[in-house]
Length: 320
Image (cartoon, rainbow, N blue to C red; front, side, top):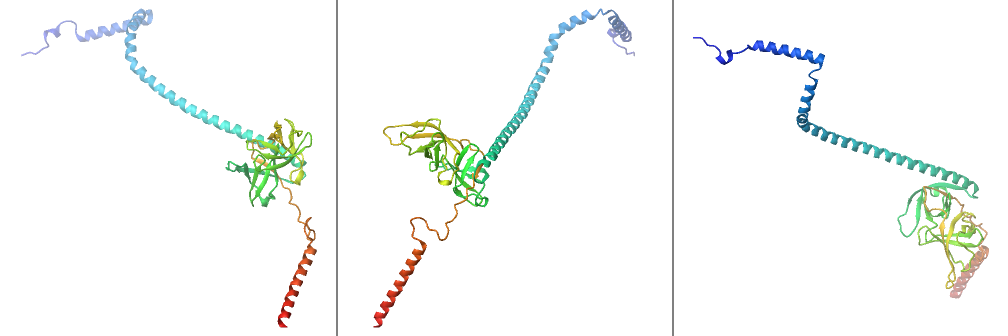
């Protein structure tokens, strides 16, 4: 019994013949297209027809790439912004440090020139911190008794009088600013020479000239300098400028307010005038109004002599 393919597959050209035919046809079309470009129009038409379908099929890929690119860009921008902020902060700090060094350099030059004109030795000090007492204006400096600082020494900056040393410790000192309400500075009006006393005010960064008569020759804009009275402050140091003068007929004294010449923006560096303490009185010298030492000793001797003489008389009376 013979077995063979069904009659349907036995009809027509064989598979090998069809393969050979289509292979030759393909080669022929390739050669023709390469030489004559007859299929360029057909290819363009097919591409135009299939382009919408191609875009639809590529849309998910494009969206995924766009989302990934978006987040990548955001991360890159955030990192770049953080780097730029850090760089800007560093540059700002460098500019501030440069400005501070320039200001300190200018202040040091001013101190050097000021120290040559002052009649007493000076010492450059650094402000450590300000006291937190809201009712006083005081700072602590990094020099004390071992550095030649004494209570009462005047303190200046490059623009004028800052205050006075009110407590001197071995390694630090307390400076009370001239604007403190309990601080008084002997001054005079530079224009007229009128003597006065400048006191701290309850207002911040203000000084007051008190106990001047209502008709005192003081005007707005007058420069107030140290008078030198008392021997503490050298004469002629800037203290402040008059900004307000109130003459009230009902009051016996004028109310005069001024801005301080120094300490409005207190820097790190200050200059202390190391005024030597007054020498002690000689052993044989007595203060005016006091009893001479010889008289005191003589009186004391006479008192002791009479005292002992009285005792002797009392004893002799008892023996009798």
